[in-house]
Image (tube, rainbow, N blue to C red; front, side, top):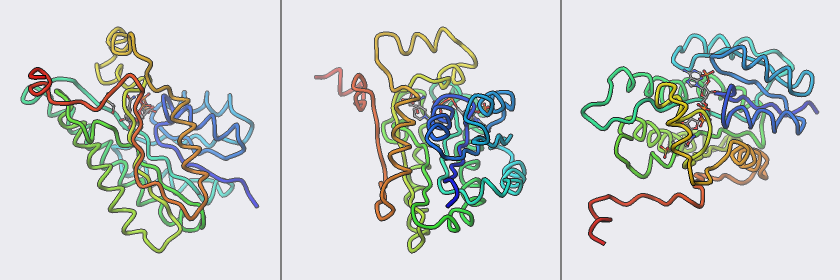
Length: 254
Ligand code: NDP
Ligand code: 8X3
């Protein structure tokens, strides 16, 4: 039997990169995608030989997704696990000051990119048979609102609901679907959200022990290798230091 294959969106950094490295180390083949090809090549060159297929995809560009999937080499088929991880938040300003340009990028990436990638991969996941899975990255921001979360949080609420809808549409197939919803994690996420502010990134994680990319990789491994008759519908993960938020207006009255 050939090696199992995982396709990871957003494998150039953070959760995606750590997951790519873990799966490659453990004998899987990895289709690693993202916009930054130099990082994908670095990943390929530092993982076991032949384990990584780098694929330049912009999740905002449907055609690049279709072309990338079409060009998957035979020895990276069929894909058994799709890790829909690529995504971002842009901006921290509350409505109405937030930027419509940022909203569009978040919706195109976190929602449309994920949906298009999923549709392109379903035939191959069906072919992979028992044990196939789709793991979608939502966020605790899709459940618990916070000031400035607006469109980002809503895009992640979409991911959670879409995962449940997809699971329903795929009933009767071998494909499992999980909505994975992490909280505060130290990656490049906050740097991207603050338009490249390294200091803001460091400040946010000062004095807390956040989730680390390797923690997420371990959880994705657990999900992807569960016995094939099991489906984790959703998995919410926070660092111990973080709690589900309560509205400030109530907290101040306690
Ligand atoms: P990083 O910024 O470290 O990684 C984000 C990844 O997404 C990069 O590989 C980036 O690749 C990719 N990406 C972004 N936009 C696009 C695009 N248009 N096309 C293709 N790839 C894209 O952040 P994380 O690892 O933290 O983020 C991974 C996921 O986890 C995201 O969906 C995020 O919303 C979610 N999340 C993060 C949390 C956190 O606190 N860090 C908590 C909860 C959820 P490239 O730029 O090369 O294209
Ligand atoms: C990222 C988690 O709480 O920083 O999705 O928005 S949070």
